[in-house]
Length: 319
Image 1 (cartoon, rainbow, N blue to C red):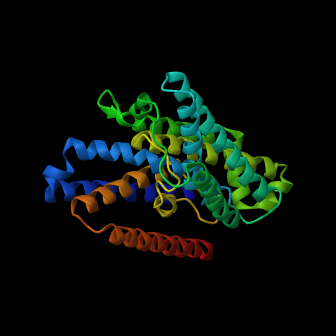
Image 2 (cartoon, helix red, strand yellow):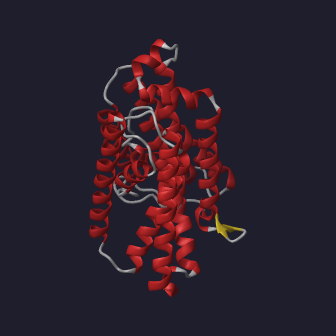
């Protein structure tokens, strides 16, 4: 029953994506189908698509990670600071990326410790974490964006390989890694058990604290990877890049079939939802619809998805 429901959700998303693509291909073929628009989608999509995987892991575990954008920006700022301090060399780029990943791991473990050990609700921890990491980033930059990064760093997000932007390859690799974690490892099963029933998970011998720490650590790493892509895209780092991504990641993860109450979610559904939302966003831009209207529509879609999900859950329980 659960398997059928997930497949139906994925099929609906696939159909919706094809429908948007066909409608925009008819209404605005020159703008929507031009190579520059498709390339732009392949550059922007991975920036929040990878954040969605972090949000998905946290939600499957029964929590949430609202601090992802803060982690992304803080990690990129620390990485940029390290690069600037070590000169315009390939070594400094590697050192900066490594520093950003370490920051992502540290922030994730900090969130996981507060949630798993001190039992503070995930929403409070990560909401405060968002402010904390943004504040730390702001303290380093003093406000303006950090510039002067190595010129080759910008090539990570702005160059192509075989005609496809490099960030899209990073998105595919991230998808495969998370799919492997969730499908083929003990951790993947444990995080679902934890999200479905924390008490039963503990009595079945699962170390809930360890699973929580790993979940938020992976989420922090994904946040840092996204931050590296964003800062490479702009060739600068700032504490308020991607401010709208928090709502967007929530919307995508729920739309992709992840249960907000935990215990259920699938990587394919989230990946399809990322593509659908990118198509909608691109369509709005081409049709010159105000960005405030776009945010409003995204909010309506999120509420509608939650209501439908709640209705289906109640119906399932009655059956």
